[in-house]
Amino acid sequence: MSYSFDIIGITPVLQFFNHQQQVETKRDRAQAYLGSYCCTLDAFISATEAVHYRPNWDWDAIVSTIVNFWLSQENDVLHWKQQLAAAQNTPNPGEQNLIVARVVNYDSLRQEFETLFDG
Image (tube, rainbow, N blue to C red; front, side):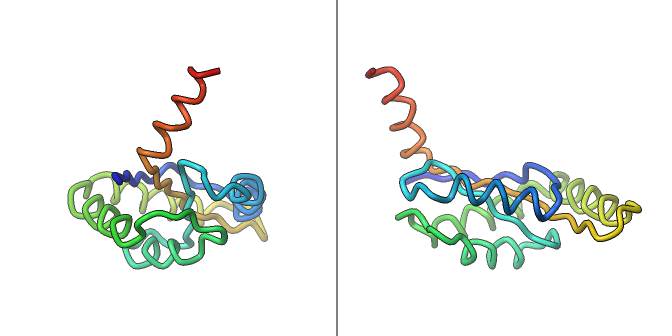
């Protein structure tokens, strides 16, 4: 199986929680979302363990994909660290933000697309 990892944005914790409640109900989904309070490699690796209904994927390969992203996309990582810091400094009392990343399983995604064309 092949995977990709991308940091996709900053969101309030409650919004991320609500989204997770909707998308994590399917174990056979093609993507999983990871949220973290800090933009560090360790935080995203730990976030893989917090996926409640973990799809039957090779999670060691996913961790390797995250590490490869971290080593090869230094400018993106720096950009998102700055974005998270700016979001955490906004004057919205009581609102905490998360940085959100997406893991995609290409094999599952391909199967989802094929079912669109089969029907």
